[in-house]
Image 1 (tube, each protein chain N blue to C red):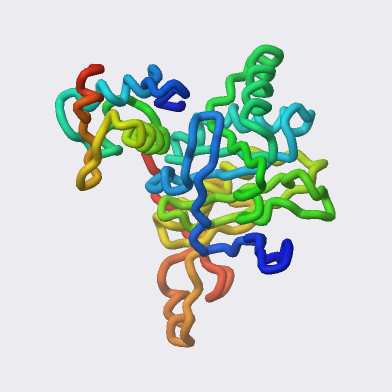
Image 2: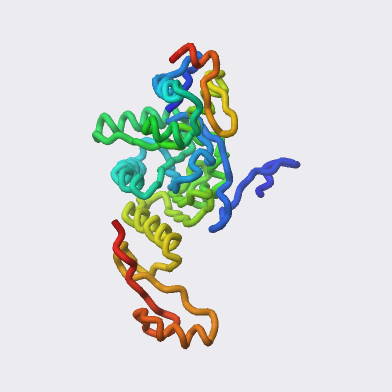
Length: 72
Length: 223
């Protein structure tokens, strides 16, 4: 499901992904395992959240940005 | 490649078994997806002619019915037609309301036919504007492993799609082939020897053989 709404805010699916990163950086596979969402949806969602500035990615690990951290 | 106007070419062509599936980014009912998002899982990419049409509706219900079986096989489903995402959303809501079936998989809104052209889904003798009923089985490394093309008038057989995935996964796991009408649990075909010496040896290897080139064996029961 789309993770960022047209007004630029995380949707409930997006918030679930952000919450999964609360305790530190995770790979898309680990996020999928933690949230129970299909891997393809997690990859797509993390990409959206990254483009919207809620997360950052380094070495294939996603982590909350300062903006993202304020939401969880 | 098809010449669409002077100096402009459109990526049109039939894909080939074994080749890497062309990557794409597309708007779907579950957000913007890329083919590479499915890496690591098997994928059934299928097209249908149009939303709100009878055969397509029966197929979508049938695809939804095998969704859980596909998940057990580490396989995702991804639909496609040359309709807008609003049309897709209206249709799946209608299917849910009138037929009580939730469509759990994403559907590509391929209005500009980008993905359809990459996968040879439009056959002008059938329709110049709609995709025919294609199925592409794509493996976890994004290789095209099987293709089915059905005409507009003929709904697909879900049991055959499941059987096809079982056969491909069995082949990969056990390095065997599967005979006509094979079903999980049936004997599988041992790859034939490629030398005269191998042909002599084959008859002594304990397989069920009609002759050196047609030998089968039972696989150990899984699970």
